[in-house]
Amino acid sequence: MDDDQTEEETAFVVDEVSKIIKESVEATIGANAYQHSRVNQWTTSVVEQCLSQLSKLGKPFKYIVTCIIMQKNGAGLQTASTCFWDNSTDGSCAVRWENKSMYCIVTVFGLAI
Amino acid sequence: MTGMEEYHSSNESTFHSEEADSIVKECIESVVGNDDYSQSLVNKWTAGIVERCLTQLVKQGKPYKYIVTCAVMQKTGAGLHTANSCYWDTTMDGSSTVRWENRTMYCVVSVFAVAIA
Image 1 (cartoon, rainbow over the protein chains, first blue to last red):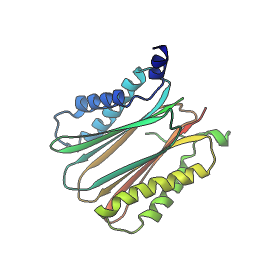
Image 2: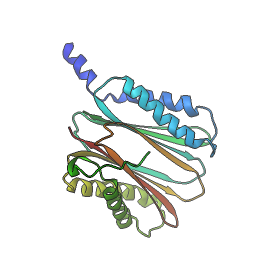
Image 3: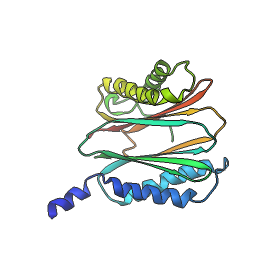
Image 4: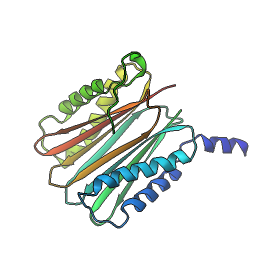
């Protein structure tokens, strides 16, 4: 049992991070419609909220959070990422969210210290 | 994101964003160059860009872990916003973002470099 606990503490848990991301997005843009004047504030707020919740987890990780918000107007958007890290300890989690007027893609990368 | 002006006292353990910028620009140009946005090819392009950037960065032989992300968007008038926030060692880690465009698409590539202890 003790072994499981220590592993939990130092592993990148995708589900936990995914939950944190979803909550941050819902809380920031939830039911809002795309507004050019506010989107800057939204992206900043989503990444900052995610980051503060992640650091509260108290795990020995460095984090990188990225957020993309795109207006729905028929344009195509493709994103890709590649990582050079330690496969056994580091991890990432991407969450795609949308409402009627916009898409939001948030990715969290966690690198073990 | 703020640009980081590091003193070049310790070449090995600071992230030089200008170097990363030129590597990224060269990779984008060689993969996408003058092509027009094509839905069938875009998957190949984003994968090609990130892989090429990563290979060039790793070749530098510095003690870093890297994350490279790339977003390619068709130009149709839609608004696109991106933001990054990082929780790391501000003295040694760094990032660089390059925005590129041609007639039919935008390409935004970000490189994050995290020092290995």
